[in-house]
Image 1 (cartoon, one colour):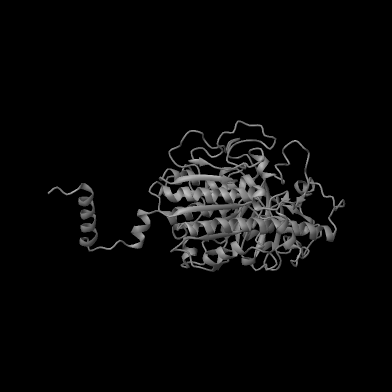
Image 2 (cartoon, rainbow, N blue to C red):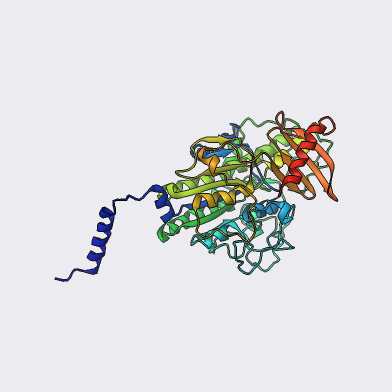
Length: 493
């Protein structure tokens, strides 16, 4: 009697399963079934969340993720502006080597532009995963542009891919807004700062549903795509970039009303400082504020503005929660690494500064949470000095890709030893850049210096162990600390 081929295959499989005598280890299983990656970028997110100890902020979804993974309390970006910060993370390169210390268009313009031809090594993090058989997908703002395609704010441009060879899918939905920057600078009902209407209000809280605004649509799209990825049974790398709390401050009405009950406080140091690196907050003041005409803002106006920012944080936190819940419901959560990363910090009236664009603590420090199932210690809160460029080597270390060649050497360090609890730190200092300035952070101090012809100028030193704001420049009083920290700038290879 002939035995059907299917039955023969099953007999062989069962025979191998029971006769091998060597059960598959969890490590071998992980290699055979690589972990998925969901990388969530959130624009302008300060480290003021419940999980960071600021309980007036309503961030239950991010707080829950932090309780399941590792929360980094001293994570610093390379550059305090969107595009250059993301360029450093996605390429794994320090600004010292790439030269990108301010440009938002670094991916596609100038000497740092990425090659449109595939290079021997991967140019960016998602490209490396794609070249390892991962299905890579971009939803929202991961690089600089709002949907991964090159368009200027006014809509001009050819729409070419911002990260060549990185994505299998550019899956950003546009809803009722025009593509690209329309969804980034969006107001309700399909209006946008970039639609030619002239609207430029600082805040708006009229939407009734989450999906009446772009971030709600992004979350909805991510959930839809996760269901499709579940069926594919192929490892995936999803880049999901939420827009809020970036300007303008726009969120559903419920978030504004909820924050009206919160105990919102004024910045602890609201006065302008005497610093070469203080700026006039031009991005922020370019928006229309019907409730305030004076500069600096009055205390009441500051509170209202801080409330608007935190309402946007509450809104985006809810979108993160929906996506994480979908991962769990689809049975993907336990084999998916989740990273939540803020592309830089944000001033909320601290030392009379608003927005970013300065090499100070509040602009350089941002949110970082990593949950790596089977690796990261649940609920660990690490005070280690870490940098955004550390994420690239960390994900390589966690996912063990066979192809790991990069076009340029990676400048970061793997954080896996911190995730597992084997180490409490991986570096002694963190370095950041803004234009010609270099900012060095130790556990206790931050030094800023501008370099002209190789010599440090405009040197400022602040004791961060006491207060995060640059209120008292100690450079002339602590020359020995200045000299020691300047050595860290020249020591970067």
